[in-house]
Length: 307
Ligand code: GUN
Image (cartoon, rainbow, N blue to C red; front, top):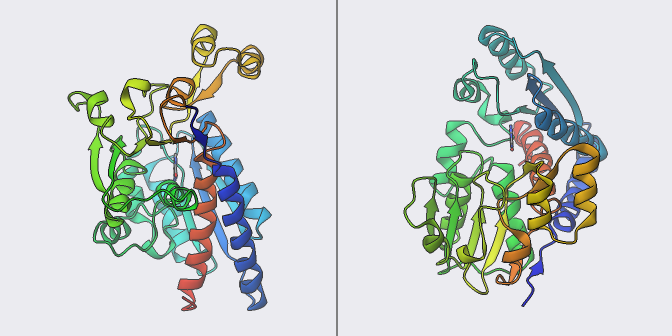
């Protein structure tokens, strides 16, 4: 059996279309949503993500600006910028791109973002509301995954869901959303005993652990739905050839730019066991950006008492 490949890009395109319509309606009321992205340092992946977020925002009519700060930015400087964005009545959404350089404590700065402008859903108020089953701003990646599962007609009530990874960005909010939909949820992490055995119980397996191709066929129950959140750079041509035998495109990427992007799931092997699977790239990634755009429009409406 070869699994159905779930098309995150198509679901994301539909969300972006709906957001563009919302933005057009808002502009009829003289409101143009505004997103401010804060990027500290020169992490190459973060630069790519931030550029993609800004471009997608512009495409749906959201005003977006990036504050690119040097890696040596002090805590005081970053605090000042966030306070200034909080106080600026024209700003609807604030996104602090993670990771921050190691001398800056991300939690302290996420706590500082006005919860009403917290389009990432990382402020403790929004996290608490989510875990109480009263979602406000929901982190973009897990929210997008729920939309994908719904679009694919994946039933959750009473099913076993396993989330591999316990990050604040994906693992924990993903577990909360699945629980709210009446799945029986297990969260696994680096210290889980018999990781493969626990994952193999899942009807729905969400892999968000950041280890290239960790999830092999033995982690997956036949007929399971597998969502791959990982985006890992793999430079070793031998490993790429093993993971994607015969994929000349990926071999070419490694030769040309030095790496290819691989998920947390061994796609080629798991595809033969699962019923449905997301690819990397083109699966979950586009949904994250679509979720951000939607949260930004939501913030613009809520701040004006329109929702
Ligand atoms: N770094 C990786 N993913 C994300 C995300 O969804 N939001 C932010 N702010 N930083 C990230």
